[in-house]
Image 1 (cartoon, rainbow, N blue to C red):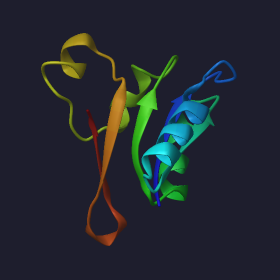
Image 2: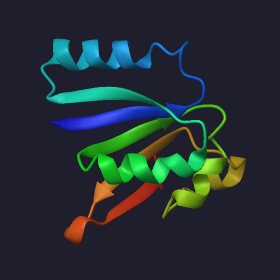
Image 3: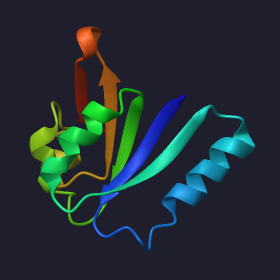
Length: 103
């Protein structure tokens, strides 16, 4: 099962987890969506390590700018230009490595 998620803090107000899980279910998509409420952006690397089937993430306040330092690739027309990221695509590479880029 593929996994997607949202990072931010706080996330108590977010409807994303329920919305996307219902959408996946109704569309017959073998995936789940998890809200990752992290108090510090440094916790982001642990989310990646602990979730090998993670394919993508949405980013909300306060991490839209802080997450950039963890990405391998930025689109010059969007993230690089505005200095913030809304969506991260996670590409699994050989030997457990990952490539992260804004999407």
